[in-house]
Every structure is written in structure tokens, then in C-alpha cells.
Length: 135
Ligand SMILES: [Zn+2]
Image (cartoon, rainbow, N blue to C red; front, side, top):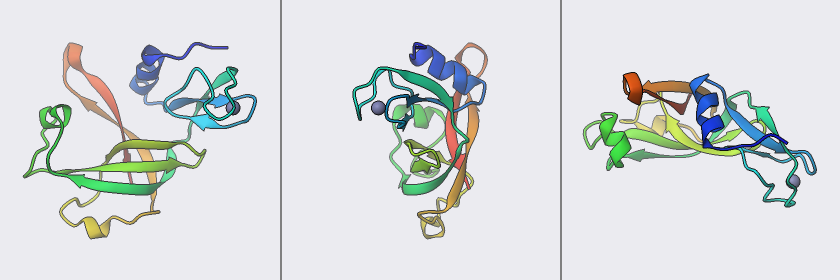
């Protein structure tokens, strides 16, 4: 069994990969990866790379941003869309939805197909990769 932790999680993101885990006992998939299966309590989980394809399950346009998003340039005048995406492999992921018109939220449709994309924020030592989705 491979060990899963935050280091492997962010290393995979840095390579623009969506790596989660799959329980070899019951077949359920998880993102981020988990060391133990919450469905059957099995501990034999294997790393699995997801396609990044999914559909929009829920979203909310955020005007009052948390600190990390304020630092990324979002605020009351520049809101962003926070989404829940259901991957075609099953797991649900909370991430930013980009490439949509947040000023016209009625144009964003629940169930519309979305694809993972990877955003770079920060520079030099503080550069980090963030997972997002786009139509
Ligand atoms: Zn399981």
C-alpha cells in the first residue's frame, strides 16, 4: 500500500494531476486521497489518477472572500464562483469554477460538464498550484 499525505497530494497537483485513491475492497474512489476507506473501513487503497471530467453539482458566487482568495485578488467587486463538482469517477470536489460569468450566475447551469484546470498563484518560493474547474 502506498502512503498518502499532503505532500503527495500537492506534488500531484504541481504536476497538474488529479490523484485520489480507490478502495481495492469496495471500489469506491476518493479525492483527496484517504488512507482508509470510510465506506467499508478497508485500508487497502491504491492511488488513482482521475480524468478531471465531471459535472457541476452545486455552485455559489462568493462576494465575501476568505483570506487566501482575497490575496488572489477576489473581493466584493471581483467575486468568484465556488463549485461542487462530481467527477465522472464518483468523488465530489469543492473547487473554484473559472471561465463562467459570475456577474450572470443564471448562465451557470447545474449538471453542465466541466473539466479540471490547474491555476498557478504566487511567485517563486510561494508559487502554488490550485485545482479549479472550467466548462
Ligand atoms: Zn472500501
